Figure (cartoon, rainbow, N blue to C red):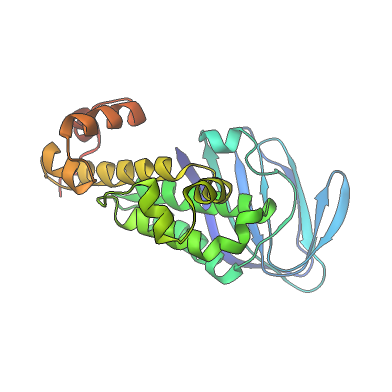
Length: 257
């Protein structure tokens, strides 16, 4: 779960601004610098190009300032107990050049908006947006062979999440992207850090949680809308993934419009 403490987009700081502090326990911070900066790395100030990002973990020294002129950056300070964050999935305190900067910034904007609006879907939206930001940080930090297939794999992933109700199977996905099943399995795991089939399950669980919380469809209807032909199979997979039955999840999270 993510708890957003602050979320700022394209904040402009004066020319003499310097940040030099240590975050409190439980406070992470993601930063995305639009201007050239100096960032302290392992005790030394390192010059960094525009569009550099960095994630700091609790207790880490945070020291940076603009190379010249005003500092322009976006930042999100948050608390989190998600496994990807505590398992060193990205290098903390290491500057990362962020490709596709304009697209990347859109996700930061959406997190800031969700944190400001405080709608009933806030927790669900922020969790998914932060996961996307974090995965992108990982991909920027550790480019792989799958990078040349980035557009194809991103399209496949988008289709999986847009249509979890489809009868997804490995052979079908391989034909969809014109690859062998073996190549797809390897490249997709490098790209997404989960298997193709695990991604399908994640997309179905995300759809199921949204429908359980936001609609009055019965469990059988939700099962079909999430790509399951057997409601018992759906219930078992949901419980394995979420730790509770679909019915109990609905009792705890359903929103009465």
